[in-house]
Image 1: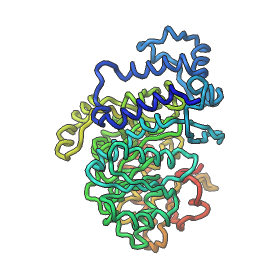
Image 2 (image 1 turned 120 degrees about the vertical axis):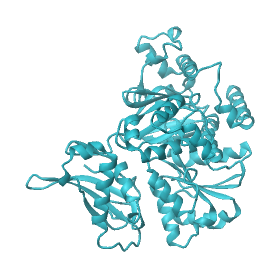
Image 3 (image 1 turned 90 degrees about the horizontal axis):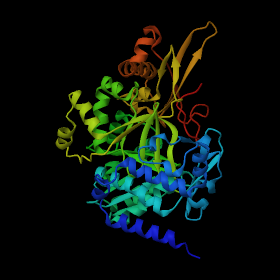
Image 4 (image 1 turned 90 degrees about the vertical axis):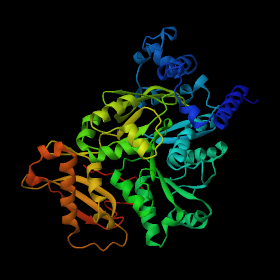
Length: 500
């Protein structure tokens, strides 16, 4: 028998998606605050989700006692105390997975696969984040767009979820034509060259290092990227503003602010937030003013900076980690995925920047940027991707900046591995294994130049490094490795920037 309740839910979600404009969706809702909206989801889960019912029961919380004021007293959920403790069906509403139609799979620190189901209703909600990117950043409401999905296709969240969301954009009247070659380099380049000329712009969607490989490989094969008006949508890794400018230059996109956008997504809950032209404008200012960035973000590395719809995903920051609430096939209430970061309201960000001498609204107007007054969330990612040297944390983000500067960037891929070496006499040094670009024939001085540039950028960006590490130990050892070196840069696995 058909599930009429789901049919009604889908019909309402589809009607809203097709007919409600982005402006309508993202405008303030005076009758319901974001906290009240999150509280309503918590109350619904307390009545319908068996696993969440048990969490509240064992915490001594009665459903009737949950109010908007007590929302912040609800227990924090984690993979360990919730996902790994309760069977999948018990984490679904009514203990029933059948209202969902598709799943993504993730593996946590244990390596055990976790299934995250969803329905088209959930995809339509997430597709709004892609609409934000395609419309506010790429002006896809006024031009035709070829969207090329370069995420690996399969049960992982990146590929198929992105494909479905991009397809849904056509329901909004956007002329977005989607092709999904996955991570097949030859097929990506063939599709761009064959279909690209038929569209006003081409958007490549994938992980930043792989998209760089695509651009570099295309250049090597004679692809004239400037002909296709290329834009990039990235996910999965933090990249620097130098990287954004480098990619914009290589594809000949003059407006660097609107050349690319990053999305903050997880298998657990789809897309949580996205870069906007406004957040990019702010981040680029912070990149030029590292002291102001460190003062706000609390660390000497540049996080990704996003804006989010607090009615779609409600964020909190607890002890330096992000906690969110949102509906999905497995609804999550105050869920901590252990991403380090923080969040700040629009007005607070505006006031902070003004105190630093940066008039956000005026600068956005001068840059002809849509200024949506949405809250911001920043994300460093998992905190274990660092090395410690003389008590100072060295972040990959600091090193990335150096390797993306001219002239170094023309000989390297941008991938590297950090580690600390201990010699037999008890001395230590820090080492950067750098991957050369395919077919690169670098000058003999490249390793020395890279080491000096890395040191200069670290002392500029990381005051901890500058003050903790003795000057005579600050210069790293740089080893240049061949493209796809099997020991340091093997293919077919996710790259890690540190090795212990």
